[in-house]
Length: 258
Picture (cartoon, rainbow, N blue to C red):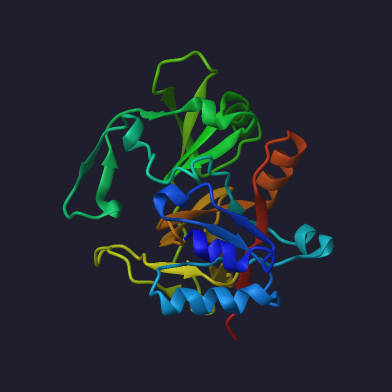
């Protein structure tokens, strides 16, 4: 890994090596940079596993005219990917087959609450955690599609009340127009997983009537095979007004079948 970094440093936009102990590095770059093709060549030559995410930019008009958004929720454990909720003492049982989709949480959620810092909404995949402020704002504004359950710091420290936000509205399957890249990962035949999102989320327009304020995709996507959070414009507006920050919102597209 270190020699890869040495060869492309200065040829890509940004390199994060703080996860190198886990055998992971994160690289951000434009495809036009000279290091991009050089990096891909090294990955192929060494038969290294990798994934990538694409970003899209939207105008203010496009954002303001959208009714639903795919949320990029802060994930404080990005550089410690092995520290999931089970690591902190959350108890699960496997229902029928040995697959993450069959894990059922049977205890209160436990986590390192210090990781939240000043955030009011984070994820420790697949759970979503909110502060009391975010919970109260959601209830006061009658936001639909979720419930709140107690969560605890794994060391029982007094760090402020936090809650697991359990989103219970699962959306229909994505439109076939959504661009997904299949990846080789272990999952069972009962779950729709093993794909990385390569476009915005796209649904059929007929599915609009099924969307609440908080929603999850049926599909388990991207590096952590997690259902993606989709929220209404109302949620985005309420969160922005009350300084509940996330990493970003991307408009969800709806396709009208002729």
